[in-house]
Image 1 (cartoon, rainbow, N blue to C red):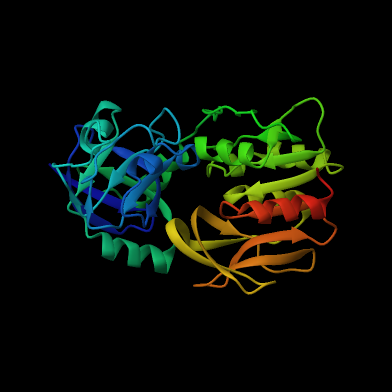
Image 2: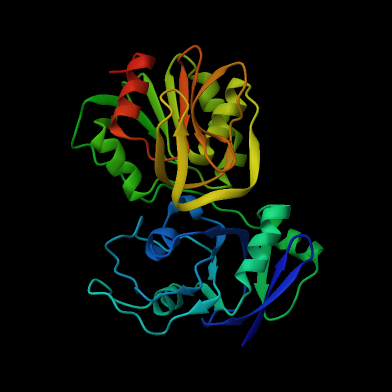
Length: 324
């Protein structure tokens, strides 16, 4: 069945429905990865998003369940250029089509994903509606404004490697986020802590002022934020923050350590960043657009990352902040 992707600026792109569900609304984002479909569609930070995969053929590796970032399909829907009905991988258990259908999520192909990505590069990520007919931009914005998500943590802390006590603020935490914290010896302790770790966040949690108030009320603590949750730190500490317009979503994203001039390849999923300003020292920059990828405040009270930091990086950051 023919379906139409209508953007909030009124632009319309046609495609073909692969799933039974043919209507959804969400924030149009994208993923540059050539695989990792199950990670993307089960990532709690992607709640409320419609994901466009930019790789030309999607689904050839199937879904294996083992790599899921949660036990839920969290996205609103998926679009791509071409769906592969055939999948071949020794770990695969089902197809992405069957997986999304069984979770009543829209899946559509035959879109000109290159044209859509170029449009987003010029005008930024924005709300969209997918339906069997084009929408007006006013109706897209109205339907999106009616969307709301009462976020409740999907995953749980591991707490097997107990070295550093912290309160973990889960605003979209994946299984790999908790594995990362466990690797660093950071464990959840809501009663006794001097460090607050804030996971990557859904778009909707960024609009919830209770998290900003929590940070303001606990400024005697140290803070580390990941991904878009840096917006909450910025609001609480009076920092400037900016949208990339077209975010960093996917793997093989190059960054540079501005202190030792070394380059690294990272996986990322964020739209916002904290530009260079008086209150912070920039530690890592994006090689493509020079946006901030990691920083630490000059008073050593808070820090932020837009990627999974290396062991030595997080260790050095915690030591500088006096957390051990």
